[in-house]
Length: 61
Image (cartoon, rainbow, N blue to C red):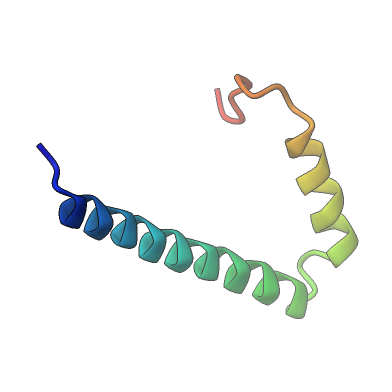
């Protein structure tokens, strides 16, 4: 059984992992845009396209 301390530590670990993952994704996006491999508009359009897919949709089948 998890204690409050254990639960707090687990939540802190999840937050740290989420932050690191978000930082990595943002870094990749910025590099792609800086190197003119994609434009900010292309990124926004693709993000909106993916966001509008049904929640059970699999991107890669």
